[in-house]
Image (cartoon, rainbow, N blue to C red; front, side, top):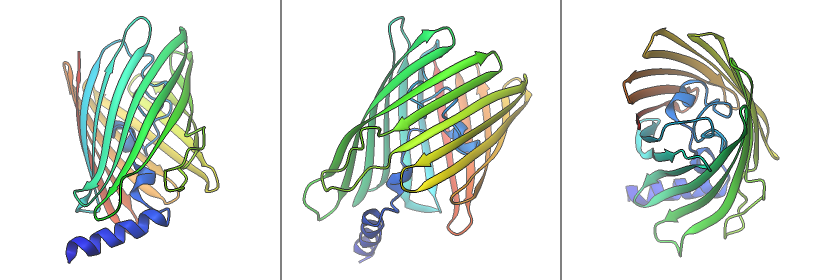
Length: 265
């Protein structure tokens, strides 16, 4: 009975447009500790975010929402740079055996100059609901640019689903315009901010700071709006390996937490 009650609840949430699917993304744990402001950072949050990377990376992360194991998300990513295009592959999965949402992306990006990059990601969305007919699915793209006008400043701009794609059921995928910057005030103190405009839903903000008291140690705090959620993050790197964690507090539903392990080669 628990199975069907849980399934009915999540099913209703999905078709009333408050599904966790709207929050399924390739944002890394570092960005989530900074209020989820990642459009101007290196990584998969912006399709152009891999352009300035000179080393390959592999990462795996796990996130749990509100202490409910059925509301967990796993993300796997890999990136390989080369002289022609930097290529990244990413996979995200949310849910459990009776209800799950899956996102697969292929990113290609390139530096068009020493301080400007362009990237495109091709995405497949799939939603499986037990006892239903078939899989709800869709294909779409994301496009992004990053500009580095100075050594201390990075500016990012991206748009998710610019083609206004919909699922095969007719349900629309949100189209989101993101703009943000990352500014290194001093070598060990970073400020990030971002504005998101979701078509038909309004504007939201994300801000965060990162402080590095030692060469391999990072403390992060941030916040995001709509709804308001404060965040905290911690990072540690050792040679080619990185470890990150974050905690986010939803005022009504409780804590969201996640960890990530990454490797550079």
